[in-house]
Length: 121
Length: 110
Image 1 (cartoon, chains in turn orange, purple):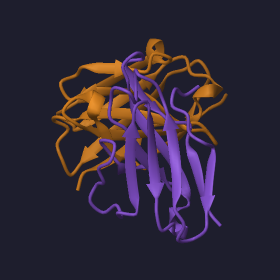
Image 2: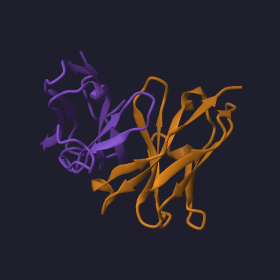
Image 3: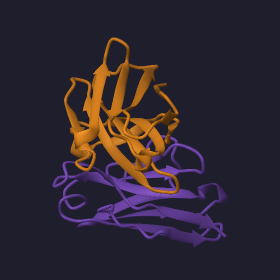
């Protein structure tokens, strides 16, 4: 049974960089699309971006200038860095596995439990 | 501002059928497959329907999905109290080149 676990600081100061890691256990990070999604308090889901196991990435255009997603296959982990954060980046951050032959026909079948990140001085 | 529009709420009594709509455009629903996610209070989303109308193992057949043109629907038949949750449609948008989620629908069991 594949499981995902997010980890990282729960509090980040404005203008600093948010860094989160998702550890994949019970299966390999090889193949699949590995996604980051966030949910602001009382709001809906927002897709941040994904990385394919090969290292290719696609990001949400509205966040693209501030995002870096990377993968470490040796550790079965992938990571998110979001720079220049503001209070608008306060949210629960989820990592999720994307399943599908091509990304246009993919779906997220395994999700982490989520980690709350608050941006505040 | 999501490109997929859902009604903010839906409700029904136990045993009733509830339908949730998801309206998009030719660059998303009109071209790609639609997935539905259920988010129970305080938990992570869970895939309920994928590829427009496929149920993962373990999802009751009370849940069904359909797609026509640039819209999709999720139906819950035989509504149960444990179905109280937020429901989100999702698909790929070719114009944005990214995954998009619907605005979400809160289902209440009266």
